[in-house]
Length: 238
Length: 374
Figure 1: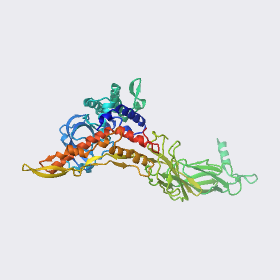
Figure 2: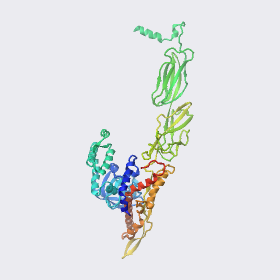
Figure 3: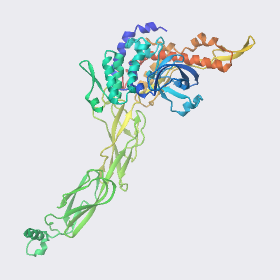
Figure 4: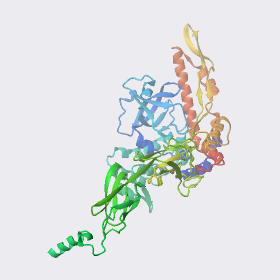
């Protein structure tokens, strides 16, 4: 693998990719644009559990890999994994396309999970009734391999676009993105995110994540004189 | 006060009671035209009453009234003015049914009926570009109405690009479909056009000489799925051949040869039919380029070197053994294969921006020049 040769194209690549992303913003869900940002707004909203854990290989068949969660080191959501982690399993599809979350056995991941509802999938590996079977939320960003030495789109974006080389810095940021989930009223949630946005407005990673989060919650962050505020429309929504 | 009442009574009586010396207007039976017309809901009909006796009606005669004989849909009705030789019946809402119109002059009266018809087009479900749509049907109420002909029509918004077109399987049937549904571009822009577009489909229904259409036709959506196609990435599959031998008096399961281990080729899964105007651009050219990337060297990409089953076999699997049983060995081999697939998937994903850029650069050269990301 000639990765060094590939990396030498890095600057040009990101210029082209930025162009690609900017020009496709107006058209939603265009595949090409989806790979130019690491944005967690959708999985943060959809996830029933957001965990950092090691995925351990348990079994596999032609279609799926079954993994268990181990070494759970951090939980962002209100869900408590401690003591229950042995009963948690993740189903990972083997039919990988461009938007599939990728889980590597034996590696630590940031995972945005939702419970598997399909009873046929639950029965597939003859799990105990007490077992809880999860799958990653939709979108490639729902599973991030935390070993940045492994080539992945997330680590590439973090290092080359956002300038984040340290796993801890990344997790601290994601932790910040998720904390609004513990707030009850939407007013509080939007205020929290707006404060966070202004605190970290120099960070492209924060801006690209928090602005769509605010939008998903019904607000609209606009920048006026170097400071973000909620637009009038969003105030009415509040 | 008393004088006023007397005057009103006097003037309200027919002129004939005051003797025959003067020219007076005598109420004769009104003749209403048109007789038994049909109108469309939301429309109106003017009625005229003519005296059958030849003499003109007295002032403020005849008087008009209406009665609903039957109704299938609720709505408001108006009959105005309620006196005079001319009146206009209107159904400004969605009323449908049969209404009796009566013209009365003194004790003489005559009547006719007006039938109010609603037409409602039921559009086909949203349809993928290049696919024949489901049924467009029409509901004409009251159902007792005899329809002499149907004429299906369509319009696209002004400014739409990519030559909007609806070809009906039948222009004149009570039910029709759209053949080879065609997506159009709105806005007419290579990049900004939405993946879905909406035609307005209506049907002109002839009932006698009356032609009715749906005043508020629903829109029919034609769309290009997003994504329109996917390429399932290669994968290391299969299993090396396993056998058992005795080593130091104990069974040992070991790998004999590469067996069925192989690299599965990429698979293109289209979500649009071959009849779609985008099939060549998206499925053949764009996804085809991804297949090329996975199988042949493309500048800037190394994905063709991933999922190397021979390398995995030689470096990892070839020397694996188990002293438990063959299933234990197979499980551990599958774990290694699944892990290698995941690592290679992650590597391939890291190359997606360039891979998409490369594929779009090529497919952008293929018409139709819409739904292009840059």
